Length: 305
Ligand SMILES: [Zn+2]
Image (cartoon, rainbow, N blue to C red; front, side, top):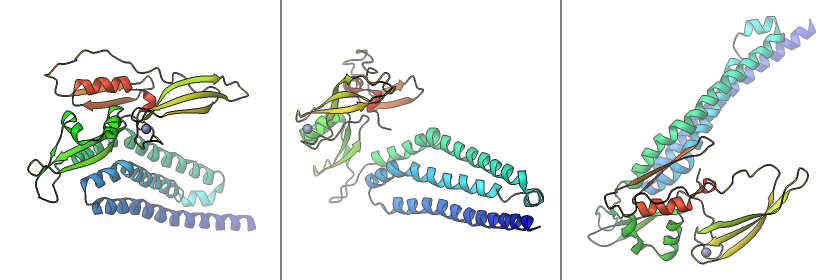
């Protein structure tokens, strides 16, 4: 008799906890999206909106859906209470297992959406934020975005060096009437480290050799040499090489020679790269030279996520 009472108490307590959790999780889920939405809309410039959306939007939405997935687990765990009260074992466990299944299913579908579908959708909006003509605050004139060839005059050498290794992409807007310019900085297609000498993102790995092979028992080591394409700084670093990692590290690139060189009719070049792990990456360029330089720099390890 006593045992049954304590079981019943436990089931009641469990149901209460689940109900509180469901409400709390739904509130957190909605609140995270609302807070993000307020932050997004309080940003004044399109550039600030772009930066916030590209850094956080998918993370926030993913988090809010994860909260719902856990709420679904809780919701399943207050279903069919009479059956569970009649025979707590094994029904309590079966119900919890069902909760895990439904919660995981929901979470997995949300994960797929935010990995494969949503990035394309947000990309279109980000492009709009980035390429909508800026207004010169001093004159009220619409500004014009300069092309890659035209913009170099307005970028200093360090900025140009960053663009040449595709680590940073600068947009230069010009007010043609007054000559005022406005420069915006965006992440480029490839990663480069910030140089500790000149401060530009132009420090790249140029040489990598295994100094000591890893064994099953010991870490090996790799000597890396970085070079800054702007100030010429050379930096050497030794990192641990753990057993098994490092398959086909950096020999992915050097893809094509030069099918389109100097073709003046080319207006844009789109490069789509497929890895043997099933990822695809798409890159857009304004001209053949840029696309070509990009392919020379390209390496799967340098790709932005
Ligand atoms: Zn440097």
